Image (cartoon, rainbow, N blue to C red):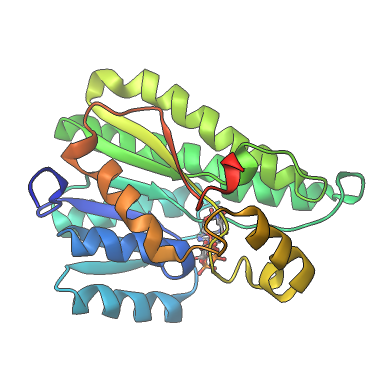
Length: 252
Ligand SMILES: NC(=O)c1ccc[n+]([C@@H]2O[C@H](COP(=O)([O-])OP(=O)(O)OC[C@H]3O[C@@H](n4cnc5c(N)ncnc54)[C@H](OP(=O)(O)O)[C@@H]3O)[C@@H](O)[C@H]2O)c1
């Protein structure tokens, strides 16, 4: 596997118990990494941990609400303790909700920003000393098509995901001296719990499929290649970038 080999590396994947996060965790494990998945639903975590172990990976799960600073800190400490270090952080946990901006309640705005954006900053800040002491590290933040586009129904989500991309660039500049590469993946429409209601809305679903040159939704596993690239030595001179994995949706 050469420069894509992750043997001996340790990764934390937030929201790694399902959907896209599970796909990313499995890809890193298949490339040889030890993986810690950090999310709230313990049953889903146990299932995914078993899948990771079935691949021969060392895996662990930590119950972590990414909006809680102490739980972030504990996740990094316990992972580092178990595996003797940490090299890769994927900030994938996220929520989406839909309402016109004029009806968006303060609590909903705050919850989206806390989960999708503030948590990313706090996880990155908390892992920085660990990566620095280790001589480098890889951060991969999960954006969205809505990092690029506006939408009448997801102002909070768009703002949070646009912020993720700007944060990615700023941290990349700030931490290049410590050999920390900070990049993002921008998934297109991917099958997951989050997009189940979209798939159920036949008209909306068809419009998306028609606009997508690949004429389909993607599957979480299809983000695995980009995650292994950005987690491995193959990307040592790539930083502050976003890789769009969307079947061409954003260029059509
Ligand atoms: N699916 C798509 O088409 C798509 C497109 C672009 C971007 N994305 C982004 O991809 C990421 C994953 O989404 P998905 O599609 O896989 O959705 P999903 O299946 O709903 O997964 C979301 C994950 O985030 C975790 N999570 C949510 N709030 C959390 C919190 N406060 N603390 C810890 N974990 C939390 C959930 O685990 P628990 O509930 O167990 O905590 C779950 O594992 C999100 O950032 C999303 O915005 C998705």
